[in-house]
Amino acid sequence: MKILVTGGTGYIGSHTVVELQQAGYEVIIADNLINSEASVVDAIGRITGIIPVFEEVDLADPGQADSVFQKHTDIKAVIHFAALKAVGDSVERPLEYYRNNIFSLINLLSSMSRHGVKHIVFSSSCTVYGQPDTLPVKESTARKDAESPYGNTKKIAEDILEDEVRAGSLRCIALRYFNPIGAHPTAMIGELPLGVPDNLVPYITQTAIGKRERLMIFGNDYETKDGTPVRDYIHVVDLAQAHVVALKRMLEDKQISPWEIFNLGTGNGFSVLEVINSFEKVSDMKLNYAFTDRRQGDIEKVWADTEYANQELGWKAERDLDEMMRSAWDWELALNDRNKKN
Ligand code: NAD
Ligand code: WQD
Image (cartoon, rainbow, N blue to C red; front, side, top):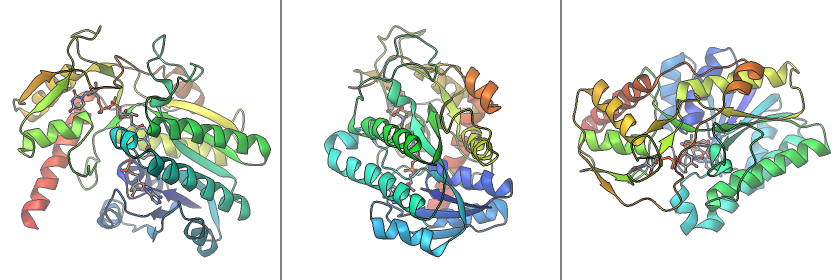
């Protein structure tokens, strides 16, 4: 069965392609490589023994988006990862984020409708909840005004999808990811941040490898266990596996309603200092870090209520924080070896 994975050379997409292939699906990747490398296609091939079909297209262009469906006439479902995702960058270039993320979705849905493709899994984010009034966050928790244009593209995309499902025969599962970290256990694929990382874990591993001098912790005066913010970090392989489960649910017609939302987290909140401690333990290193002011737009604490995903989706995150940090470190070491050879 052929599945189109947009953004399939990216961080979460590549891990999902591996899981899909290992579950027996045939994958077509569509990606314009704006935030990833073509070499990921070969790396996936080395892990699974199957090189996925790769189409280099910009989905924000309607003609290029449609060309994928014209060429591959038997696509059964789409998993849509392709998007720009840097929160700070989106504040500086809002139009680029709206153009890329919203046009891509509209083009994709138009082509799906034109070519009779009726199933889509969508990458949403816990960012749609903002700082929730109560924790843990349930799927029914109200969404808040977005903190950034990026966050707003996720809210708008959810609304577009829900309206489109209501209007016709489309079926959708929106997955709201908490904080994906870590890498594949083979250390052949992982996160490839361009330039200085915004996110905590790549910043930690790049500091440890010597690419960055020191990690700055944004605030230690929050009302949390140790004053640093708390997040629900989830291993990217657990996240990838949830996509296969969600896809199967849709294809086997097991949805309760054609528009469904699931939170994907572990249900555990860890502070920045706890993440650093875990890293220091698994790497047997001391990390150079210091405290600085809060980062604008950061929330204090958030973690998922996982009951609905566990019960209804039949999926549960299994990998703990140490495994997440160990795999992130192995990936950074593998990247370092690769860079030395080049
Ligand atoms: P990523 O940047 O590694 O992957 C996204 C991929 O989409 C990249 O390979 C990029 O080249 C591609 N892409 C972007 N615009 C495109 C376009 N117009 N046409 C074709 N390809 C395009 O990001 P990721 O971390 O793997 O995130 C995947 C999805 O999950 C995104 O939608 C992101 O918003 C969402 N998400 C990510 C996180 C996170 O922390 N990583 C959290 C919640 C949600
Ligand atoms: C985690 C914690 C920082 C870097 C972002 C997006 C969100 C979602 C996931 C896509 C925070 C602290 C970080 C550093 C630090 N993405 N930190 N020093 O902010 O929870 O979420 O990624 O949908 O939308 O906003 O993740 O990894 O940036 O930060 O102290 O150099 O680490 O303050 O508490 P965040 P993050």
